[in-house]
Image (tube, rainbow, N blue to C red; front, side, top):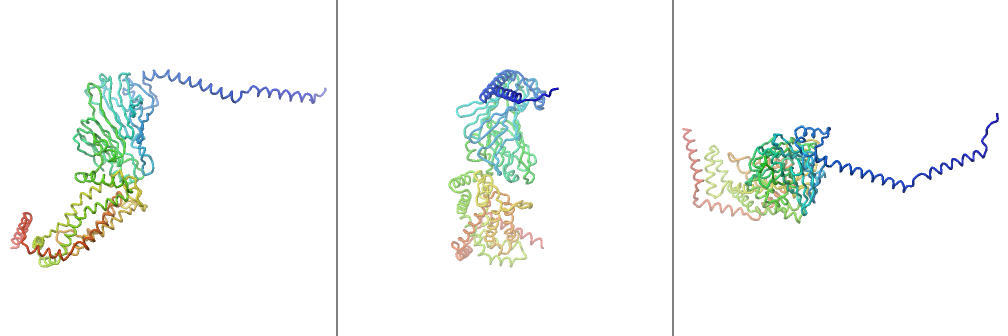
Length: 622
C-alpha cells in the first residue's frame, strides 16, 4: 500500500482552520462592559424579587405568631399561652437610642433595655462602662389574663416604632393583640441627659387583663465590676431606696442575702459605686419587695460582678387598663448630675453619710472641693482644702494644747498626791479631782476638742471614697485618687493589709506617729492614772492601725491625713514656741487656786458619791 504522508499544504490548512476557530471563539465572548451591565441587571432582578417576597410576608407576621422549633424559649412561651392568647410575633432584633452621653439598645423580645453604655467613661482597664450588658439585667411585667393565664412580658415580642418629639427621641414598643389592643413600653430620651422617661400602658386590654389581680413589675440586675479592686468597689455598691416621705434606706452592704418589703417606695437605686441604675416613678409603688445578694467574698481578678439586686412591685390597674409613668436613670453617681433631678430626689442616693456628718459632706466639702478643683489640679485641690480646714480648726487645736500645758504645770502636785495616797486609790482620785477643781483645770478639756473634730473626720472619711470628682484623677504616683495607690505589688496577700503596698498610708502613719508623740508625750511622762488607757500603747497602735486600714482605701483620704497631720504638727509647734507662755499659765493656775471655787451640781454630785464610796469602804474594813 501506498504510505500516507502529511505534506506542507495539509499542515498549513490545519493551522489556518485552528486559527479561524480561536478567532471566532474570542469574537463571541462579551466585553467587560457587557459583563458589568449583565451583572447589574441580574442583581436588580434579585432585589426586586426579594422585595416582593418581603411585602408578601408582612401581613402574615401581624396576623399570626410564628415559632422557630429550635427556639426553646419561644416554644415554651407559646405552650404557656402567649401565642395562643393572640399577641403578635415580631422578629428578633434591637433598636438603638443614643444621645451625647448615653447609648441604649432595646430588644424586640421583652421590649426591655439590653445594653446601657456610658459614652464618656471607661473602667480601670479602659473598657467602656456598661451598666447593662450580656444579659446581666432583666425587666418584665407578670400579669394574669381574664382566663387566668399568667404571662411574662420577657416572652413577648414587641414591635418597635422610632420617632421624634422636638429634639427628643421616642421609642414605642408595642406587644399587640390587634392594632387597637396592645401593651406599650414608651421610652423618651432627651439630649445630653442620662434620665430616660419610661411609660408602661395598655390600650383595649380591659377585657383581656384580670383586674382582680395586680400586674407585678420585676427588675433584676447584677452589678458589673468597674474598678481594679472588686472588694473595694463592692464596699460602696448598695441597693438604696427612697420612701414617699423622703426617708432614704438601704439594704445591707455585706450580707449574703438581704430582703425587705417596703411601702410607698419612690425609687430604687442599684448603685455600682460610681455609677447607678435607678428606676423612679412619678407617683410611688405601694409596696416593693427588695433584695440584695453579695457576690464578693474575697479579692479576685476573675470576679466580674459585685452584687445581685432584685425588685418586685405590684402595679394597679385603672379601669382594667395599665398606666404607670416612670423614669430610667443610667449614669454617674455624681452630685452635679443627680442634683438636676430635684423633683425625683435622686441626689439622695449618694452615700454622703448620716446625720450631721452627711450634711457637712453634702453641703460643705462637696461644693468646696468642686470649687477648688475647677481651677486647681485635683491633688493640689486636696492639699489646699486640707490647709484651709486645719486653719479653721486651729482654735480647737489651741484649746487642746493649752489643756496639755496646764496639766504639765500640775504634774509635780499630781505626782505628790500619787505618792501620798499610793495605797488608797479612792482617796488619790478624790484629791486629784480637788486639785483640778481649785486650779480651774479639767482633765477632759483635751478630749473635747478631739470630739468636736469627729464630724469633720467622718464627713471626710465618706467624701473621698465616694466623690465622683476624684474618680480616675491622678496625682504624683497615684493614678486614681478615689482608690488606693500602688507603689509595689506583692506576690502574696497579707491578712487585713492586702497584696500591694500603698505609699500615702505609710506617709500618713509616720505623720500621725509624730503628732501623737507631741500630744501624748506629756501624758506619758506623768504617772499613769488608774483606769486611764495606756498612752504609750495608743501612740504606737494608732499609726499601725492607719497603715493597715488605709492601705485599701482612697489615696485621696490618705493624702488628706498626711497633709493634715503635718500642718497640725506645725501649728502646735507655733503654739508651743510663740503663743503659750508656761510662766503665765503657772501664775494663772496659782491665782485660780487662791480664789474660792464654787462647785457646780455635777462636781458636787461626783464629790458626794466619792465620799459615800470612801465611807462604805472604811465601814467595811471595821
